[in-house]
Image (cartoon, rainbow, N blue to C red):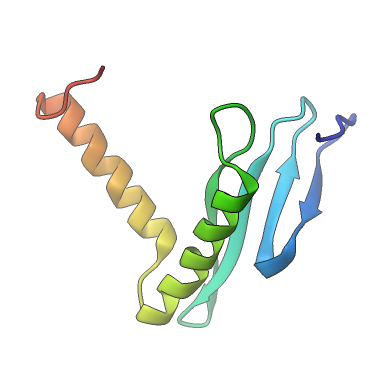
Length: 97
């Protein structure tokens, strides 16, 4: 359980994963990585009911730190996937349930 405080704070975990905790207790899981010598950050997901479990967050963190070694940015890949999904929904190729 995450403690709710008057201002946001950050909880660090192993493997470069960390979670900023907002004033209302909302927790998102992030990791930093380096690509071509530049620091980048990617959100792995949100904690809570129906959200990201700690085990799944660690798996995503390991993947996000492995992918830059192949010369690909996990953050840009995530943006592309989101854009493709939005385009598919708007064009009617993908129907919402």
